[in-house]
Length: 247
Image 1 (cartoon, rainbow, N blue to C red):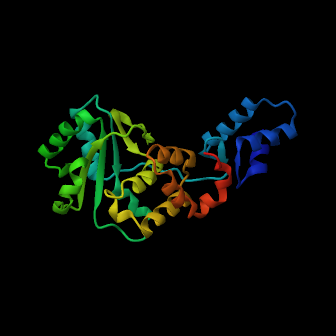
Image 2: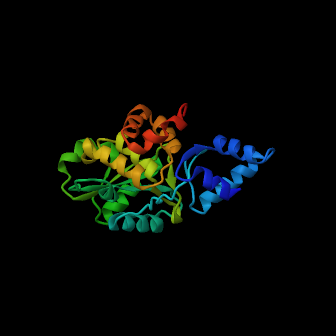
Image 3: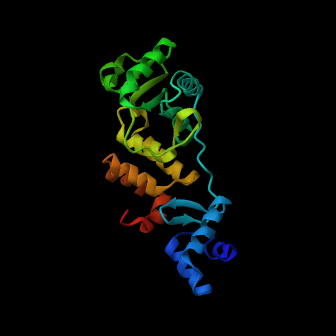
């Protein structure tokens, strides 16, 4: 069955319903669960990618590797040692350089954790010589920030599509990063305008992204319209948008 699915849909995007109809025409009575298992096995073999809920692309796509810079790595090690049971999410904007035309003159590491722990984490980082600020103070203190790389600490968001990592530290997924760039323009000011669209275009062209996850997260942050506008300007999303109607 997998060979027939690959032959029929190679290089294409389709829904699981399209695949079920195709397999039904080949062999009447094939259980839907069997079809789903075979498609998921193709995903595991990197012969297909899941680009949304029940939506697949049958082509090889590079997976986003959630890398972080030296400062973010040192922070992760510090937090894992001093706050062993505290869940944190880390976003390091330095990795966005690969998706931009013009390289940014500075970068920011954003740490998200539960609200009650923000002050403790902030104090620990400062005591370790790291230039860190609470997100609630950022607007007031921004003009005094001179470091080329600094740290912002904010209360965790209720919806957080990040990748699980060891030691209670999660690294932001590409889906989260794309939405946060729109929602937190004050933090990511140098990634706005033309560069914002460059980031979106290069991200969806070069990597496998889950559009359903992007749109759900954007809706949870009440910025779905703005994120959708960015997606619709990319050639990749234009090709598959019809598959996501109603999401």
